[in-house]
Image (cartoon, rainbow, N blue to C red; front, side):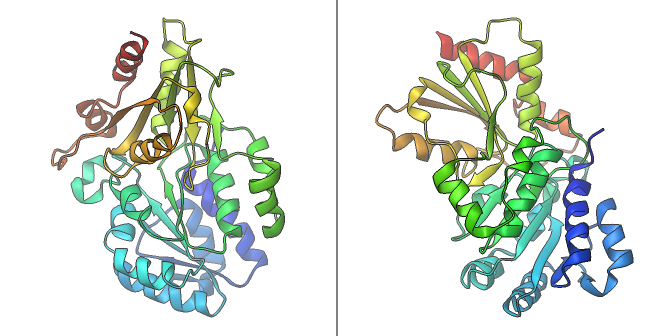
Length: 324
C-alpha cells in the first residue's frame, strides 16, 4: 500500500535527521503526519515559525550560511509567490542549498478557494536562477526527488500533492540514484544511469507524445487503461524534474500534447515549447492546461479540473485531432 506523498518525503527526512544533526525543518504552521515524529523526537531542530513565510526564508538563509541543511515547508502559493523576493535574493542570489517544500499542488485545496490553489508556482519558480524544481506523481518519484534534492548544492523546490496514489515508478528509479554528489553528476551527465522521467507504455517513438507531470499523470494513466482505440502511435511520458527539463529527443514526434494541472503560462507547456523550438524538426505542441483566468469558484478537485478540461475525455479528443 503506497504512502501519502507527504509522508513519503518526511519519513525520509526524519530518518536522515536522526543521523545528521545539521538537518533543520522550519514550517510556516503547515502540518503533515510524517512531520509529527520529527516534531516529537527532534524538537530542538523543528521550528514552527508561524504564518510568516517571508521571514522563514530569511531565517533559513541565515542558517544555511552556517552550513545547516534547511528544509522549509508551507502551502504552495504562500511559500512561493508570497516569498518570491526573499527566494530570489537570499537563496538564489547566494546560491544557498535550502530545500523548499510546498504542499497543495493544483486544486488539491479546492474547497479553500483561490488563495490556496497551487497553479502558478512553476511559472514563478522556474524564473529563479539556480532553482531546481521537482513535481512527483507517486511515492517512488517523491523519494527519488528527495534524494536528488538532498545532494543538491543549489536551492531546490518540490511540489507535494496530498494523498496516496498508485505507483507509476518502480524502486529502480530510486536505487540507481548515487549517494555521492560527484558520482551523481557523472551519472546525470555521462552514464545516463537513471532518468527523472518515465514512459508509461513500452512505446517511446510514437507519432504523438503525451507529456504529463504530477497529478495529471494519473489522468493519463486512466486514459491508457480505458482507451477503446489503438494507442500504438502514442508515447506517454511522466516527468518529475521540471527544471532542468530532462528529455531532449522531442524532434522525433509530429505532435506533443502537454497535460498539466497548472496555468498554461509558464508551466510545463511553455517549458516544452521552448525545448521544441530548439529542434530542427519542430513538433506541433498542444496544451491541456488550466484556463488563463482567476478561478474564483469553489469545489472539489474533480469538479475544478472538469471546469478546465483536464479530463480523460478531453485528452482523448486532443489525441484524435492530432491523428487527422
